[in-house]
Length: 391
Length: 216
Ligand SMILES: [Cu+2]
Image (cartoon, rainbow over all chains, first blue to last red; front, side, top):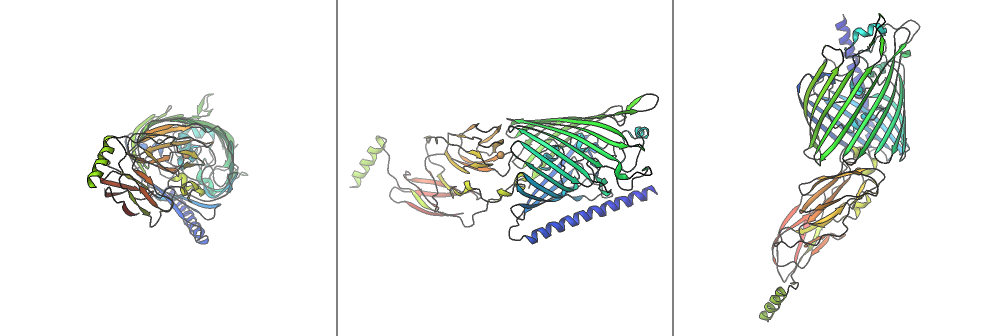
C-alpha cells in the first residue's frame, strides 16, 4: 500500500512540475511575442562531465536526485529584455543522473520577470532564486570554484517533511538523510522579491510559497517571508544578515494535533555571510541558525551550520580552493537524564583546484571528505574530476 | 641619370639616411559589421551591455601591419599606453602597440575588476585591485591579445602588438596607408574585431604605391 502511495505522490509531483514547466514556457513565449520590437533572446549553455572514484557521492544528492557530481549535466540560461526595464529570465537544468521514477531529467529551475527601473529598485516575480545567504548567487552565476555545495545548502537532516514527530522519536531517524533541509539551494520558490542597493548598502525583501528548509511545502497554504541587509566596505568586503520564517511542512502532513494547522509549524533561519576578496584571494564564510517547530507542543529544536571557503589563483590558468563546513545539531532529551544531538553532527571538507583550458572551459579536480559523528558509516571520501564548458 | 640615382641612394644607405620607398594604401570594407554580442552569464543579467558602448565608436575599423619585416631592429615602444576600466568597460576597446611596450591597466571604478588574458601572445592575470590603482604588463611578443575581466564577462578588449614600425589604423572612412616601406616582398596582416585575421602577400616597389581594398 505504501509503495502505491509513494508512486502516486511521485506522479503528482511530476504533474505539478510539468505544469510549472509548461506555464513558465508559455509566459516566456507570450512575453516575447508581446514585445516583438525590442526582444532579443540571449542564451548561455553550460555543460558538465564528471567522473568520480572512491566512496559514493550520494551524500551530495539533492532532494530530486540531481547531484553536482552526476556524470552529465547541462544548464541553459535564457533571457530577454522586453523593454529597457523589464526582463524575463529562465534557467533549465538537465541532469542525467536523476532517476526518472522520481523526477524528470530536465526541469525548469527558475523562471521569473525582473522589473528594474533603477539600481535601488528591482522586482523579481516568478520562480525566483534564494533571497538569503550568498552562495546561491555565486552558484547561480556558475562561480562555484569546487564541485559540491556547502553542507548547509544541500544536506538533508532526519527531520521528516510530511509528519509531525515528537523529539524522542526523532532520535531514531538520525542519519536518515531524507528529511528537511537547512537552507535549500537547488530548488526555487514562487514569489516576489524586492531588492535594491547603492554603493555601500543593499536590501532584499521577499514573500514566497514553500520554505527554504523544505521546497515541497509549497503545497501548504502558508507563506515564507525573507529579508536581507548587506553592506559593502570598499570593493573587497561584503557582509550580509538575513532572516526567514516559513511554514515548513507539506500539505496534508500526518500527525497534526487537532486544533492545529499544518501551517502553524514554523521554521526560522538567521543567516550571516561574509566575503573578503583582494588580489588573487577570494574568501567566503556563512553561518546559519535554524529552528523547527516539532511535536504536539510545537517545541523548537535547532541546529547551527557554517562554512568557510577560500580560493587562491596561483597562475592565470590555475587556482586552488578549499571549503570546510559543519552542522551542529542541538542536544535534546534522550531519556535517562541524558542528552543527544537530534541528528549526527557532520563535517565536510572539499578541496581541489581548477585549470582554465580556455576562458570558457575549465577542468576541476576535487577530493571531498564527509565525517558523521557517531554514525555507522562515519566517513565518506571520494575524488572527482570535472570538465565544465560554456557554449 | 640612372647612375646618379644609384649613387645618391647608396650614399643615403651608407650615411644611414632614410631611403624613400613607396607604401601600401587602400580601404578596408566591412560588409556586415558584426554586432557586439554580449557573452557570458554576467552579461546576460546586464540590460545595458547588449548595445555598443560609446568607447567602441572611436575604435578603428581595422589595424594593418607588415608581419615579416626582415632585420632585428626593435620599434620604439608606445609611450603611456593604457587600458582603463571605467563604467564596467575597457577604455579604449582596441589598443595598438609595438612589441616591447608596457601597458598600464588603471581601475577607475569603485568596484573591483580582474583583468586577465589567456592569449597565446601574452598570458596574464592582474587579480583584483581598487580604484586609483594600476598594474602594468610588458608585451614582449607580437600578436593579438584578447583581454577580459573575470568578474564581468561582458568586458572585452583587444591589444594588437605589432612587430615593427610599419603599421597603421584605419581612418574613420576605412582608408589606410603605411608609407616609407623599403621595397620587398612581405605579408600584410589585416585585423578587424570579430573577423578572422587576413594575411595578404604584398610586393612593395620603390616607385609606386600599392593600392588595396580589403574586405572583411
Ligand atoms: Cu570587471
